[in-house]
Image (cartoon, rainbow, N blue to C red):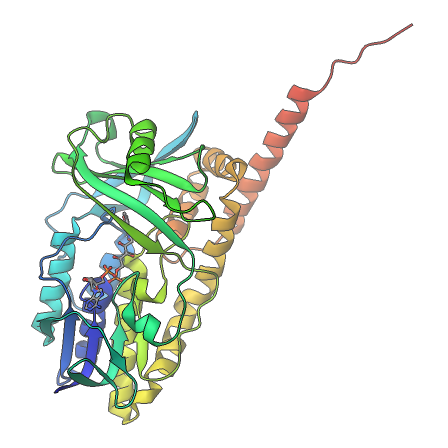
Length: 390
Ligand SMILES: Cc1cc2nc3c(=O)[nH]c(=O)nc-3n(C[C@H](O)[C@H](O)[C@H](O)COP(=O)(O)OP(=O)(O)OC[C@H]3O[C@@H](n4cnc5c(N)ncnc54)[C@H](O)[C@@H]3O)c2cc1C
């Protein structure tokens, strides 16, 4: 048995952030970062890194993770004939996960974490431990199919599935993140995110529902239809599931915490999850360190809930409501029209989709105005010409 103060399962963004959060709070802690994969490892992802992620890392003392990358200034959103193409309030980055995750793992190791290749199979509650490792606090940061989440007896929530690859960036899609909503299968969209090095991350994602999972061929077909040419010359196709957040945030009490995808924290509007992984990872690490310092490791869950509630609770309710509304094509159309008419609506939508945003009054007014306009139009178009009979 190896004994640790904190054992973190999974060395993705959530796991590395957990180790960094804990070791910044107390550099003397013995922290294990256990991952079944050898690093650097790939992860199926759109590779979109919101500026908020960089802010969180900078605040935690992790500098320069995107300094050598090309910022992406524009976002284009299309649905059928409708579209909006605007600069974002702050640029985003597109960083392959082999690069981004390795940088976070290195930062965690530099802070003092011990990275071990190990696939965790068993989580014991008394005494707390994982296979042949003992720990005073455990954080499950082991992604969409978390063994730690299962050991806590928590079911997984709604899931989406997505596939991504890398293909050459055509001129008309350079310097931008492009999203094309799929009017044929709602909610679903295709994307092409320019990496700035001649290649784009391209992909297609869809909510899993009653109709089950689409095949790889079906997803590739939708991607090629929605973003013509995007699959040509494509390599490294890889699919994965996305555990979508619901409107509720109730982390369990006790010495076993969940962060990132393991906690079911992917934005159901956009499929974005790295921000939540880093935010909850840092908070979980800090909560673990505080609980250990207090001499009561079982208080970690309570401390984690207290720290993350102000950050997440309201936001998750708003994105759940927005995702529900976005199941209606008419609402997406209204959002696109309102964003095309007003940069502030566009900025608020981006904030809601990327990190901490809420449904703002400006956004709500824009949506209502456009929905009412669409109803008036339809009424006008379908009105029968009145005839007078004598
Ligand atoms: C196709 C696709 C596109 C996406 N696009 C974006 C995007 O553009 N931007 C964005 O922000 N988010 C995106 N996401 C979501 C994002 O990928 C996840 O939210 C993010 O990876 C979550 O990080 P994490 O650290 O929680 O989990 P992960 O990154 O999945 O890391 C979990 C780690 O745990 C390890 N592990 C799993 N089980 C065990 C075990 N039993 N023992 C030991 N180790 C284990 C794995 O090897 C892995 O390294 C996308 C997801 C998909 C599928």
